[in-house]
Length: 266
Image (spheres, rainbow, N blue to C red):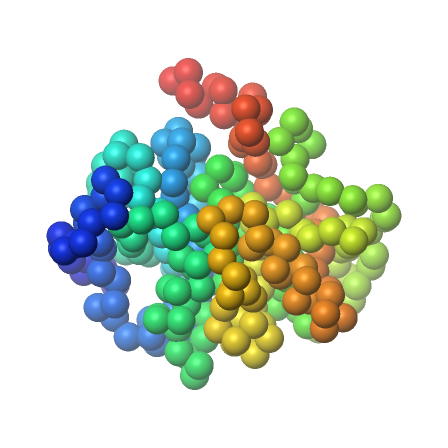
């Protein structure tokens, strides 16, 4: 299926962006049973390029994966790159202003997901992350077979940009519905790091009321991962890191990992 995109000029521009991609030309049932990944873009073209390349490796192996890129009034070079990005499993929305990750993701879910036609899983991924196909598959399997774990992230490569915090205790063995045992690490009094998070469509619907980030107090940066942690703690529910799945965080503040430095020298 090739999605038809329309590009229109906004009547009231905010910032430099002047275009909006309309992705509501298909029914809500388009997302039914799929694995839907949300990724906000704002800056750093090279990181966005690396992220998209890694996601395309996942997408070309699985026709049930959809990448939704939410462009938060990004740099002009990123917008130019995204406008040339065409793939039947990639949806791009140019929002025209910086809405932040949480608001942009929640707004899209509210307007495009249907209560009777849910995705299998819903993801939030920052566009400065690499995730290999095997880790993606393992996270999909685990979150669908561990009903007591409401949100999962991967472990992260041990480098200067590893976002994990307070992972002091050993992993716990948890048996899934499929009788397989998964090893999950629970951070102590701390949220699971937000570069990669996944939940089931049922959790998004029933627990978070058609939101990925359970908050109405939107900030541009900083409160999205914490909102998940606080809501799950309030309900005495769990989130954790899945051993055996690994993400690579490419940059953090002024730090850059070796793979990212090599890419930027191309």
